[in-house]
Length: 364
Ligand SMILES: *Cc1c(COP(=O)(O)O)cnc(C)c1O
Image (cartoon, rainbow, N blue to C red; front, side, top):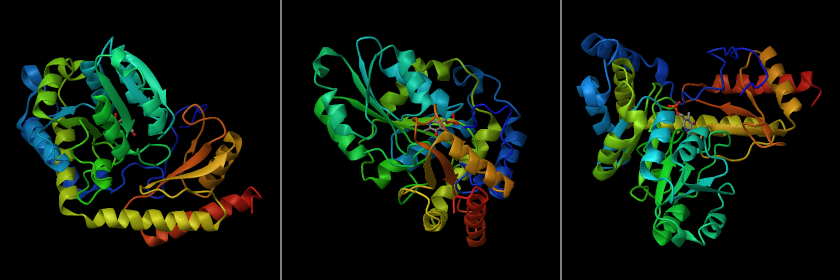
């Protein structure tokens, strides 16, 4: 995030290593065509909330497709991932209940938690033993909800979902996973972090978005029929807002089908992430191993991180510096993301740009 800058960072499309469009689906001809066709068939807008006049066949078709990918009974669309979180958490817990939240959770989970007015305890990032400690007085609360990102957006690492699922079994808690960055990317079928970690079926509430690997926009929750029926009637960010636009749902539906039918693009993505990480490490940069396309290049000092980002921009490469308050003090970084559409030469070009930028700064 470019804090302190005025206006939006200008990203060069071809040389962007900052995009969440991991599979290049935002510009995929079939996805773009599906958006157009949905507009032609259903119109520009959906004309109302789902419960009033806005329910379209394409919404229901998309919900069936998500439920199939995630292996759940049902699914529900929201206008965005953010709205999915802030509507769902308060629909499930409230005063007298307890939420356990990972310290690095996305802002939408934090905001949903605040809106719920449940008691909140934050466990150290990825530290399920700390989460267990915080549950010592579990009996003092009615319901308990554990919320976590599947893939953490600024670090690219994964939540310990198997351990958290065990904890939820032991303490009678629900597990909610925001898999914005895992959906379409991780797992044999692209179902996400839960599939990758072998815990599909143990996540009570699966949340995701079409705005990252699916290249479109809109959020969703998938889970049991009972859960979804409850949300349809109580999640305020579902009830009191206009249904997703035909264009976004049409695009998302086409993208879901590409994810289902083209597993090879996930393999290309991993290959590109590996070769980018190797190239950057060879320059002496600190890039932890991640099983995702998010590669944090750890710099530490915020001023140094911005200097490198600026020097890269001068070399024609768009990679944002991520600084406090988005990340903790002393952990500023460049967040490099690769996509399956980057070719070998794009990766080599990017690594060269890093090398030139580092020379420019006399770092090497
Ligand atoms: C991007 C993101 C969201 C929000 O999704 P939108 O559909 O863009 O609102 C939620 N959680 C995480 C972890 C994200 O990275």
